[in-house]
Length: 252
Length: 252
Image (tube, rainbow over all chains, first blue to last red; front, side, top):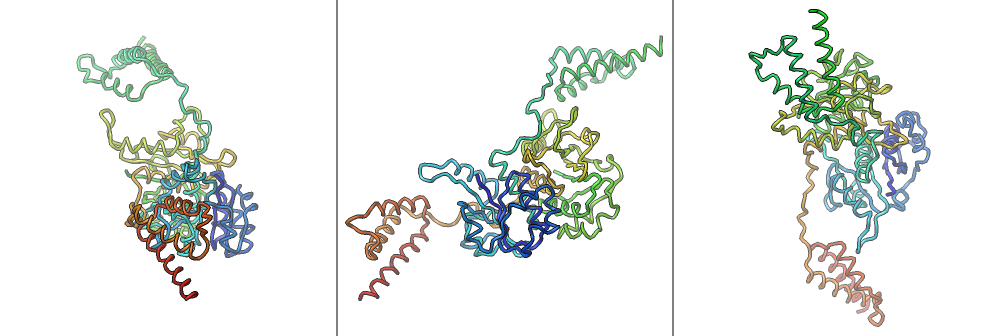
C-alpha cells in the first residue's frame, strides 16, 4: 500500500533526517513536510547526517505550505497523538489498527480496497493541534509508560514504520534459516553417549558407582532439555574419549 | 521481567541519551555500558539533550569494563545483529522470540521460570563481534529493507523496547475507551431520518420525485456503512429541519 509520512511544522532538521532513515529502513520513501521551521531543512547538515544512507528519501521529499497539498491522493489518514481529543477520530493502538487497514486493503462487498495511508506527525513542541487531528480518520497512540510518554519524533516514526511494515507482511530476516539443517540425535545415540560418559566419569573419579547420587539421570535430563543434535553427540563422545585417553597416558 | 539494555563500545554520546529515552518511554531503566568511547558519556551534553526527560536513566546507568560484569544476574541474553553468524545462536525475529520468552516466564515442568532478559547492542561502527554474539542465547534481527538495513542504534533500541513491552502486555493507551459510549441508531431512527431528508431534498430541488435516480438508496447505503450513532441522527435531522426552515423564511 502506498504510504506517506507527513511532518507538520517540524523544527529540528536532525529529526527530519532521522525520520527519512527510519522510513527507508522499513521500505518507505514518500516524505512530505508541511511548513517546516527551516525552508532548507532537506539539505541542512544535521538532516543529512542523521539520514545516513537515506539521503535519497530527503532528495525526493516535498515541502508544501498547506495540509490539502500534503494529503493529496491519500485515502486514509492517521494522526499520531498521545492524548485523545474530544469529538476527534477514535484513538487506536497501532498494531490493531494496522491489522484492520491491511484487511481493508482487500476491499469488501460494501467498501472498495484501501490503497493509500498517510501517517501524520505534529511538531516536536506542540504535537498536533485539534483541528489537524480532526481531519484524520484515526488517532494512533503508541502505548507508552504512563509516567513518561515523551517519544521522540523520529522514534515514533520508527516504531510506526516498523509496525506498519510488519502488518504488511514484513521483510525477511537476513539468511536466517527458518529450520536449521541440523538433525536431532535419536534416543539410541543419546543412550550410547551417556553410557560412554558414565564410563569416563567413573574413570576420572567424579562418579562413584557405590554412591551415584542420581548424577546420570540428571545429566540425561539436561541433555534431553537441550534437545541434542547428532553432531553434538559426536562432540560429547569426543570429549569422553579424549579424557579417557589422557587418563591412560598418565597411568600407563 | 527484569530487563537490562547493554551497550558495547558505544561511540556517540547522543545515542546513549536517545537509548535512555527509548527505554524509559517503554518503562525500562536498567542501562549498562561496556567500555564506551567517552568515560564521561553519561554526563556529556549530547547525551543529556537526547535523553530529554530520561536523565534519571542516565544517572542510574553503570559503566563497566568487561562483559562478565555487564551480564551479571541476567539469565537470557539476546544479541542484536543484522547478519547471522556461523556456529552462533539461532537468528530470531523479535516478535516471535519475545512471545516465546513471555511463555518461558511461566516456567514449566522441566524449566524454571525465566526472570531476566538482557538486550545487547554493538557499537555504531562495527556492530557486535562474533565472540560477543556467541555469548548470547539468541541473535535478534529486526526485519528491515533488504536494500537498506542500516538501523540507527537508538532506533533499534526503540523498536525492541516497544516490541518487548508489547510482548509483556503493553501499556494502556491514554484514556482511549476500548468501547465508545455512543449508542448505535436503530433501523427505525434511520428510516425516520431518511424520510426527513427525502422531504428536505425534494424541497430544495435536489431530489426530483419524477426522476429520483436511486438517490435515496445511495444515501441509505452511505449511512449504513457509517454505522450511525443516535446523536448523529439528531444532527442529520437538525440539518434537514434548519434547511426546511430557511426555505420557508425565503418563500413565506
